[in-house]
Length: 535
Image (cartoon, one colour):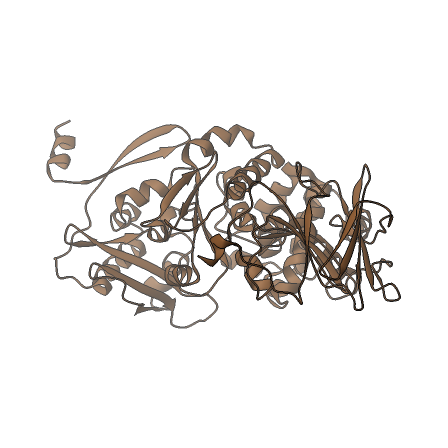
């Protein structure tokens, strides 16, 4: 008891780890340094602690609240979770022996009591730089969570399972928060992990909506979004970046995941359940099926690290989504997690796996030979439904209207809503805007698609002679798509009629939206701004 009192008297670094409902008091000696210490010198002392394997002391170099935050969901990655996956940790033996050297470069200046350091391995460019954020506290530097750095000064919107940080004047539609919560709940349900629901509900996944400039400053490179698995958060430019949220939740359902997993599985399951970059899982599924059916990518060529790296993301990600979806279909939730664990671990382990060693591990779990799996994959592709949007002809006598040189007919059936849009003297090119009580004021995705004022609506069907897409601009997401050059189905565009014919399945159509309550826009005409938008 006297020893404990002595430690407290010496002003030890005290923090409280919260894991799976248990509270553990941990007493750590403070990381000390003189008040004029440079960020580089401070970081050098941190590296020394890591290289010595003294993770208790290494933790004292981090902001104490951030250390607690890194443990709040009870996920165990490494001895020091808040810096797992960094070059310092991954190669500490080689660095300690002098085989590898760390390169430390100061990043952009963000404030008098702040610093940024970009850390790389001098001998290799295989790993991207790890950006560290430092902040002076009480006259001494401390390493800072990039999630907390990105969230600084933002207002907080509390969801059931997700906590959103957004700029004071930045819109975040309630529909986007509901979508994030729904996605998180679905991941837990899909992997039979609803027993972890209360844990996530209490601690929450942090989600920071970032500008282009902020996310590049915090992460160190331009990106659409990133999952920070050290602090169980998502930094994204998108309102509902399901893909990155899946990455965090996959660690929750495992509790003790590997630091790395084969990207065909790690990225694949995130595509299968979360889509990618403003495209729903169904849209990515259609794209992946096209890539496989046309021979661009085959079932087995993405499993190795080199195989995945050899393909551009636009090819590798959609097909990886199909591969993960297929393995989840064949092996079930427990079996898929078994495959995932067998193919997770250190980078050295993953790089050492050749095609056959990976195949053996998957065969052991599924009970099928690789040949059977390859054959079954093609059968699986053939049985998958499309994204819910495709050719279909509406009865011309049904509900419709003529506006801006476009004539629209709408027919509602039990299974789908069918549209025919005719142009007066040219192929139709425009949009159907559906009224909604929760329409957002702005849309990043709309601005990327069209150089016109946002018409302030939520659900929109964009069409021309080559393709049609159904968008939710509250989520900034393409929910369903049909493209003539990607789909062999006929009957979409009739050149003689100058008309497009398409149907949207009821499974995609949102509840409560009246299919007959829409406005028509032709892109040749400017979208009229509302008085509020003009202001």
